[in-house]
Length: 123
Image (cartoon, rainbow, N blue to C red; front, side):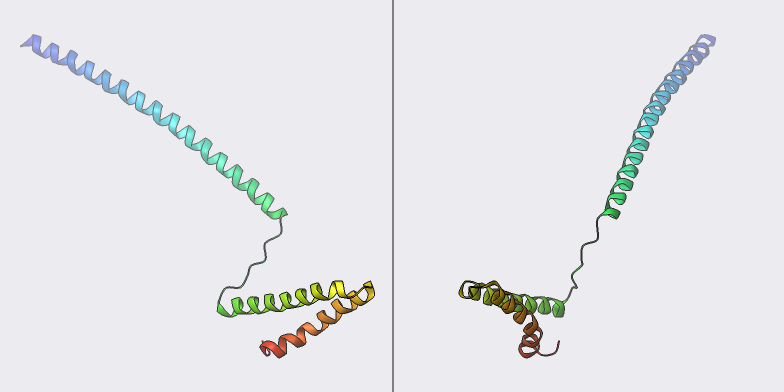
């Protein structure tokens, strides 16, 4: 009986040591993982800060207004600009001097608002 108690004590001591060793291994792995995560968080923070600094140097893109009315207005404006460009492209080779070409371009630009109102109404 005394021998069994002594054996059980040795056994429990071995098991306790084994548990302690495994726990130490788990804690060491967890510490390595925590250090890796901390490095990753620091790297992401540096990257985000660098991106924000660079974003401050670049001007913002103009945002287009969403919605049906804005889309319709952009399409109408594109049609009017296309018509003006086509007229200039057709008239350019027909008008020999630069003064006439510039006068045509300025005249078309001045008539563009009138053409807008006559074509699409007051929008």
